[in-house]
Image (cartoon, rainbow, N blue to C red; front, side, top):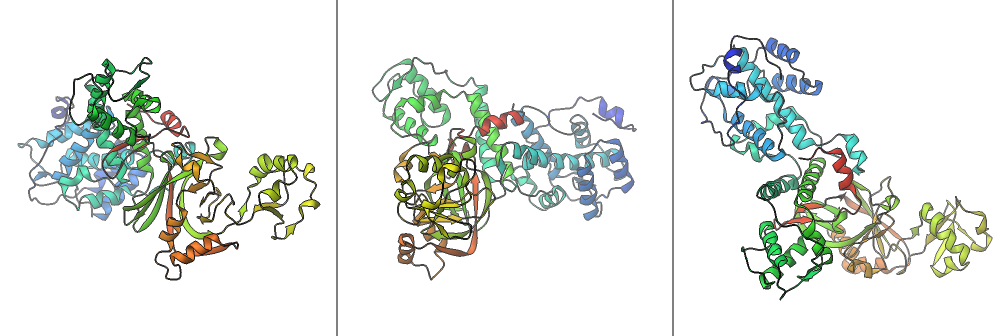
Length: 544
């Protein structure tokens, strides 16, 4: 804490830093605008250890507004100041710690000038100090809550979605032109951040009330008609979570509990059979503290992504194994997907790009690491392997190389040619693929193996994303192109010749990783941390 020497210091220091009422309101009143003395701005920056970036933002913010005060005028503190103080205190209650810059000095000064008997003067150095403290705290609050971790942290957890750009002084200038009563609801972040924050408050309240009885290994299975103490425990837990609508103190597993279990299962991506066993029991056994941490981790991820784009865009959520197709910020439809396996080399990468091409009846050019690890050993075991799987060898110019001319036994760590699978129903890419050119060589495609979409955990690929309904995606992407009727799309998917189609308009695609989120029905969902990214996030975040 830094205390400045001035005539009013003794008055302020007699009061401890107070808890600011979360519901402070100040009647809006008209007053004469105040203007900062630029000399005091320079002195303030000398006396307070402010990050250089904040110094630049501070100077630019006031320069643009001709050094006019933002938080007060001759009539006193304005409603923006009270709304921002409320916001700081909501953050403190949520995070269980005070992250305010100069957390004693700011509330002391604020309450000092809240006194109705306190006179205002634009020459008062303490008034200027409060003005500047509020502004730099806004910059710091915005960075903490809306920007998130450093670029280096994102790389550590293998997150490569291009993050939004944040200009703090422009952001504050924008807020000060809107309704001050909506200050606390203004959050320039991905919508999920605010939705998860609301559930975090609920889960913290459950934790403070004592939570629920811990499950034990004695419970193997519970279903409709059963009766035991753990049925009552299940009812209490599901009531607190909102899956059971009415509190019930009976020990019988009845129909309302069965429906509540199905709702819980749906929120956790589990088979909805209404029976507490296996994965459902494990999900119910996850400690409340772990779920709170999961909410905080995914709120942090919400800070990393840009606001929802306008128009058409696609989102693949890896832990959910689903593709979400959006148009004008509404979900048009969804389908199941298969993502990369849990092996680090085969993890589907978290990034964003734009779909530019559809390739009908594609060749599959086998990546070299698959050739070395899988294809070459298979050929050495069975000389007819390539013929059996309708594959051929070509050079870099696309000229076919006779299979019999290759000494397969001489290749182990490198293969100088391309092995590709010809178009057809048995092609590993199916009948169509969707390209968003990227350095990770990730794309979306059809698959001939449809049965795997029935699995609850779908991690079977080498990193690319297999689609349950690729025809529907092709329809969606080409729906505004009169040349592409449904009939032509189907014919092109069944053709024996590869066909590249360039989209008239690129469509953004986001490959994301959220293990908890709020769906369009307002329900909180949880999924398994399939790539252990949450574990890595816990090491980077200070979680309270």
